[in-house]
Length: 162
Image (tube, rainbow, N blue to C red; front, side):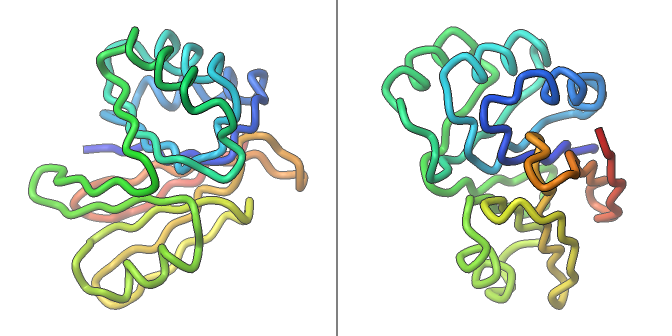
């Protein structure tokens, strides 16, 4: 199973459009927060087709009511709130927006993969049997727009620069 992990799109639809071919190839996508606007949810829902998209809230996701309303038009989109806990073919995965929380989740030993965003810094680290992963940012504010493709259960990571 291949998981596309993205974060911090911050309404940058042009970079998100560049990411779409990778997202469509993956079995599912995890967005680690800071979509920002409801139209990003629509773009994801229409761009990826029927593949599942799991989204957690970031600190810049302002209009949560409208984001939730738009997401209802796309049954493949699941809004998890602050944290997602997934069982993907027997592999325990957690996602949230914040590095401090992600690090604690990874150290707990309960998950094989923990994904996060917020600081816009691409990061891959093994913590015992857990892969701690920040896909970086879609928006490219810091000069690098990136996403990560994770092969489960091998936990191998392929980095994609947009």
